[in-house]
Length: 204
Image (cartoon, rainbow, N blue to C red; front, side, top):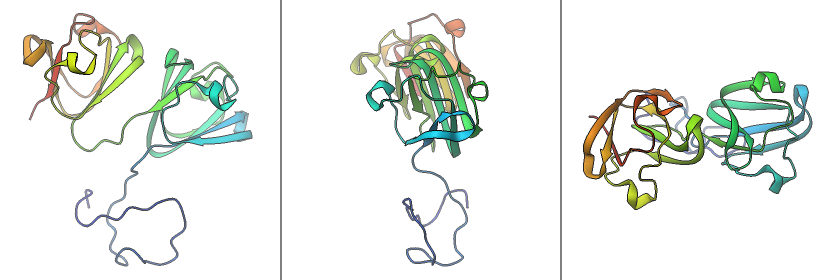
């Protein structure tokens, strides 16, 4: 239980017997990749596409501004955007069925890009270049002493802390003014000076 012990990876398919793992010996399960099913019309009619990665421009798939419903399986959370390149209105959806645009918290036929939350194990924080979780996103699961090295110095405008408590620093090498971040969503830089974070690390 609690995702410990011997592990077995299960790919899409049917498993009529216990081949590959010990019978009656599974105590916990979790997804290893997020997925989302998009539908062309309300109530899951019309074209259906399933994705398991970020898509910055649905025009490449001939599905831009043409999505009216979606389904998200257990263990997945997705960010849906009105415009390409993760811009415009954003809706964050957890696992569930969303039969129409209203349920998806978007205007009908406006979805143009989307990306998943990472599957979380240890401390995890998402940093975004623009406010309200838009633009470029970086995922950190450990300390980052110099955002210059990843081209993200003084560019953080919103944050989502998925797990753990984190400290954000004004300067590189964990120097300068610091801000404590607990799990939650920070859509605006109200809790720190905009574009002023140069290093981050989790608290242990």
